Length: 113
Ligand SMILES: [Zn+2]
Image (cartoon, rainbow, N blue to C red; front, side, top):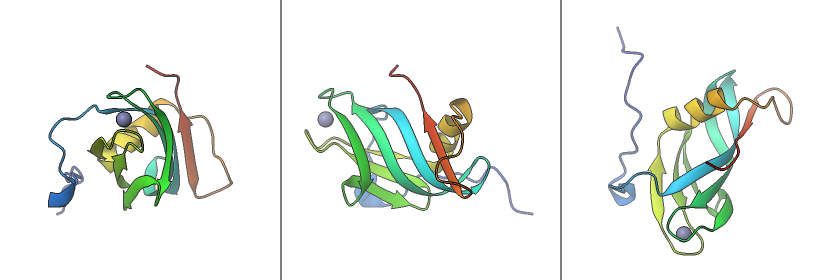
């Protein structure tokens, strides 16, 4: 039997960033496989803790989607962080603001923390 608790860490050596928490998630827009399951990231709005810039990251613009996990890069100071799919899913679960764009998509947003 496969474990359902399979780790979902970002493993690409190029992308390992030891310190987490560089970015504060503000909103997540993603393609969904289920009510709380992310298949692919579309757009992630974050605030960079290093330079305080709020950025809306999308594929090719500071966001690398890895099947629901993501590599975030600050366009201003270049800070990078890998974020697991589980973390995005937890965010969506904590801040469900409804479905955006019809079936197959997830949207979540939260006030700045
Ligand atoms: Zn920054």
